Structures are given as C-alpha cells and as structure tokens.
Length: 138
Image (cartoon, rainbow, N blue to C red):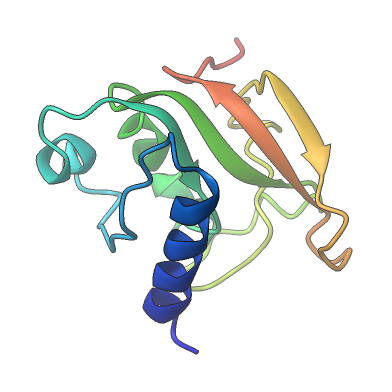
C-alpha cells in the first residue's frame, strides 16, 4: 500500500471517529520551503499539527527550518522523537537515522512525551507534544 493511499484511509477513519473535529486531507509538501504551510493552507490556523517521520529523513541542516514552518500555522505540534542517540550523523535527503530533536544540538522542549510501545526499539521512538512556536533551550 502506498503512503498516500494509507494516509487517505487513515483520514477517513479519523473523520468518522472525530465527527466534531475537522481533519484535513493528507498533503505532500516540501517542508523545507519557507512559508510552505501558510501558502498551502491560507487563512487556516490549526489546533494540532501531526508530523511523523518527516524531519528525520532530511539533512541535519534542515532540522531547524522544517519545524519553524509550523510555528505560525498552529497551536501544538505532535512529533515523533527518537532517543537512540544517533543525532551526530548527517544524511542525504531521504536517508534515515533516528533523530532526537529534544537532545543537543537542537534542544526542542516538549510539553509532554511518551514512548511508542508499538515501535521496535531500534529508534527508541517517542511521541511528543510541543507548544508552538517551538521553545528552544539555551
């Protein structure tokens, strides 16, 4: 099953369960492009934005630019946080090493975080909720 097909199926499931909530369709965006969220969703402000497995597939130079696109678009960001301690390795776009954005040198501070108990331990994946704009530790 392709990612878009899976996303559309999950969108339909979520829409049925959350009848009082508006769930926008899955979109493929270049999250590095400045202002991409405001351009794609003009005049829309989100209560919650969920971004899973996007940041960790980009070069480390994009780790700060991608989340900054979310800052003006919503109130909260749900993001996967990997705690496997492999943040130092840079990658090419599309490659993958686990990325712990709560760790140095990024230092994003979540409001809360919980381990993904359904994930294999390779990534040591957690889900975190961040208040937007993202707070960065000194």
